[in-house]
Image 1 (tube, rainbow, N blue to C red):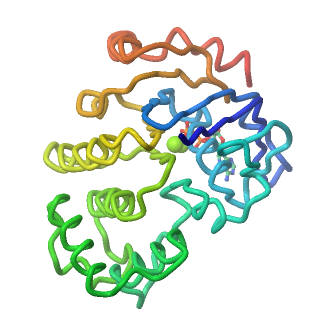
Image 2 (cartoon, helix red, strand yellow):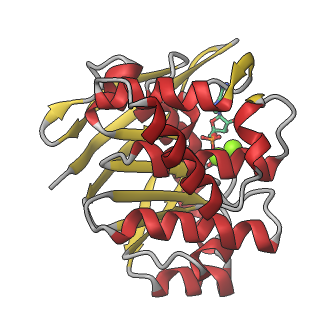
Image 3 (cartoon, protein in one colour):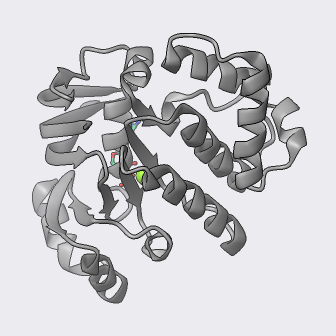
Length: 255
Ligand code: ADP
Ligand code: MG
Ligand code: MG
């Protein structure tokens, strides 16, 4: 069973004034079959955590460790991370003119599976996954992310999730910019993905509304570049009622 282990992670980002420390000691373990929600105010470093685990070159890990089943993730290239079973939506290019979605997805699946999926079964697989996500068939022939609406980008993320079937998926603000119907479709996609119990999910979000559709096993509050509180799903209800005000001090203290 897969385990992602983040230990005392410190991450700096390159700015014009030099490196700025954003993550100040993150500890988190996500196991197969578990869904963890990370919630926190804007600017607290949630996306920095996902970028750092994804291997984005702008984010420098200054200390701490990230391992998947005991293997050092930080030593891996971005492709190796994907092959190892880590899914991070932002590791994929934002816009790829001239590359169709169906080719892009097949290339990604080839990289992850180690061999190209047979064309005929692949076409069926993509069709089925797109049907479940209520994605129009014409989508397959469009260029990657070119002119995609916010909602289409999010569905695309979940389509990748369904087709690549990673061990651990990190989803950052999957709910942002979605209308009620799209939120339902995307949430159902995530729930189908985790239903096998063989994958772990780290769901990063500012708002509690997606957690009404995807029930987390654990909720962590992120403030000032670290986790300041952890609990069960009931913690999301507390945050919904009270907001992040009580963590403001911790946010400043940690900065
Ligand atoms: P969140 O996702 O919780 O809103 P982020 O991780 O996006 O937070 O940002 C955390 C902090 O790091 C913010 O103060 C943000 O301005 C800063 N930051 C993140 N990325 C960069 C960057 N590439 N350059 C400069 N500052 C950055
Ligand atoms: Mg942000
Ligand atoms: Mg963010």
